[in-house]
Length: 304
Image 1: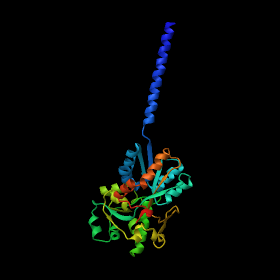
Image 2: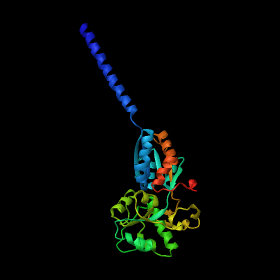
Image 3: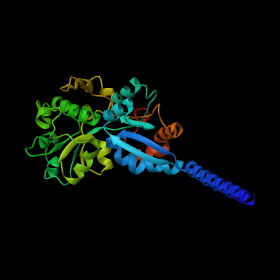
Image 4: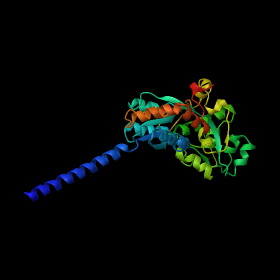
């Protein structure tokens, strides 16, 4: 009998220890920081991963995970359920429509804007030419390595081509688009959006046409473009920008859209409250200051 009592006491002690360990594990898990996953346009890598994400995570005692790719590519992955995120931040309204049709997004808010510029590598042997010659003449020089992203998956790649098309009209330079870009999906020029700026920094490519915000975030030199070309003025949409349109080999039509960044909470967000707080952060004083410091313009509604 004594042996039975001792065994029972040992069994209860073992259960007690197991309960304590289980409770400790549950408390540890409960104390873990929530993880906010943000899928963003690849050109925003510097501002998202080095500024906005860390600042928000510190203020909300959370962990931040950023995923940067072309906005259309991300939208399709999220719409199909092949990728999970709490917040989607894209440029131009087009990628949002993909998610709206899939029921993943019901509302989006503008958080920033930008404009198209010519960006060149300070390591390029053509760098000095941009101060002496028209930018379109430099881009046509033999041997210059021009880079852009795929217009089939990334709005920046679309807008680079539309800018060249508008420039041909504005400067009266027929054939400029074909002379600089070649085929619309020229594989010799196409790189992942997130790698364009790093390739310019390293001198792997000489020049690109892209977002001023991305160039300034990476401290790269730029050539400003007239408003009729830089796609930054909604007032010029009907009179100028609408004249630019292209068709890819698969029949997809490319048209100019306002260069506005939008943020949206996804309907399948695992951290919906944190996601809402992040969108509010992007719109708020601190978020706007961080965006401005990285070369982003305010959203259209906030422009003076």
